[in-house]
Image 1: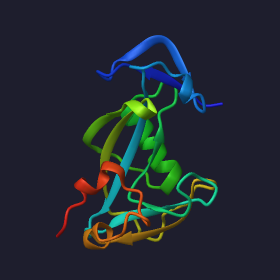
Image 2 (image 1 turned 90 degrees about the horizontal axis):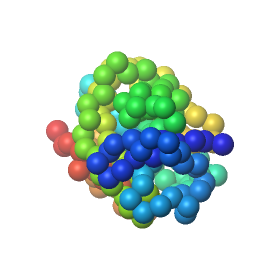
Image 3 (image 1 turned 30 degrees about the vertical axis):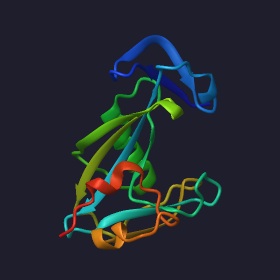
Image 4 (image 1 turned 90 degrees about the vertical axis):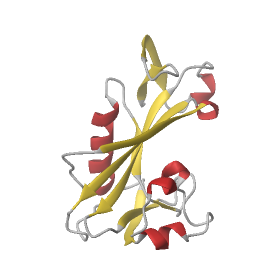
Length: 162
């Protein structure tokens, strides 16, 4: 069972209230859990795309992010570093916050980060049950992908050409 901290719309933790993954329908209006997304850009200008596992929602779609929900007691940045490492094997020393948005329908706060890395591009690791493939792509390649192939959410606006 995955336990989350609860937040209000000002990104302030609500003390004494915890949330349980899978019980989002029970989350009261105005209460949110924290989700992070990490866009990975190589120093050569390409971006990392991760393919969602067939068992997940939006199966076999490409995502220009690693990420997931923050666990109880984790700060946003701490959670982002953990999710990046778990889903890609990339150990970052710095992440740049890009933006954060509220999704009232999903009772979630989404924090987006950028990781710039010079990692060995063949060293990316897949997380069983989460991802099944990866590839590096240019901004033009990603921005021209049809919505039926890529699950990008608000991340496309942070992908820079040239």
